[in-house]
Image (cartoon, rainbow, N blue to C red; front, side, top):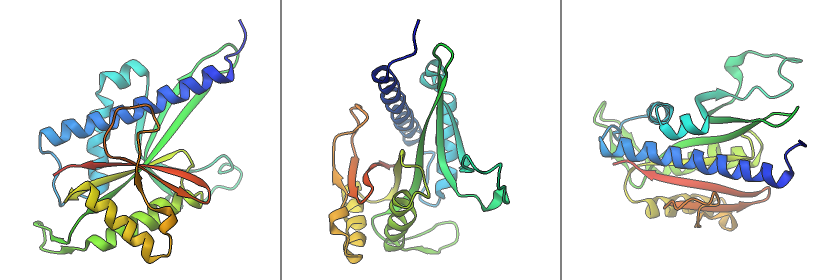
Length: 221
């Protein structure tokens, strides 16, 4: 028996990524149905709730997909030049699945970075502080999109938008307005079918100097 061909490996990758997207959408549906997520929650708390649902999903068990949150991106050269792990960049989700073949196993990985998003300003009930929507559009661009462009996050990273106030399409308009203010209209988000062969709504793409970035926006409230 020989090694697995490149075409079959690519099929494994596509199936793995599709299952990861399906898992996160299922987790969203579960949390949305039970009203577990509130406008006051930070994205780390939401992501932890999502991961908890995913961990108990039969699809994750059957597919042997493992997810961890707040994963530190140490890189292959970390052992040769270790620094304080507290200074390492983190990403919200890392998914893993092992693919076995004769004398050569492969570990597949897929990443997601999540950002809270709001269509309009609103006042938090917990402390009456005002959340400014434009600041979150700017943050989505500068610590989401730009971190993928610069290699801060792996290239196979999907951006997740947790829409906590307002309508998804209006939120996308807000992100594009921020890109426009930076003279980056060529990088606008546009509605696109899921590249992961999933029948999932609210998927968007954007084109950049390093290639395309995929976005999945999820409305919670």
